[in-house]
Length: 129
Image (cartoon, rainbow, N blue to C red; front, side):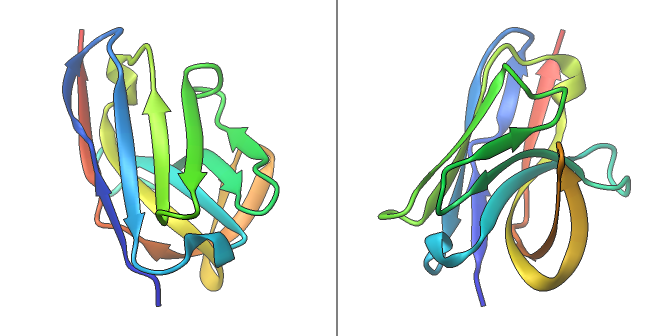
């Protein structure tokens, strides 16, 4: 069992930046991949935003995030991050971190499709114009 807790969301203006954090209760580095998802509005399918393979550090992004967002992780601290720059109103939503594991729900992030079993509770990001 892996427990994930997101933080760092908030309300910002267009063009500003936010850094989201995700704290893991156990070794995140043992998961094949970690990712960030966005859901907006509530009830809509979660959109894969960014993914990182923990062993190789290879990353993938959605078209909307590529070039503006950066995913990273700190194995020693069991932390996952999402640096979001040049935010736009369409980036608004609830952001979730997730850890890949068999038996989870399948999601696509860029060219990759993986099963994600562990999810955090989310942190809200609101970008106003």
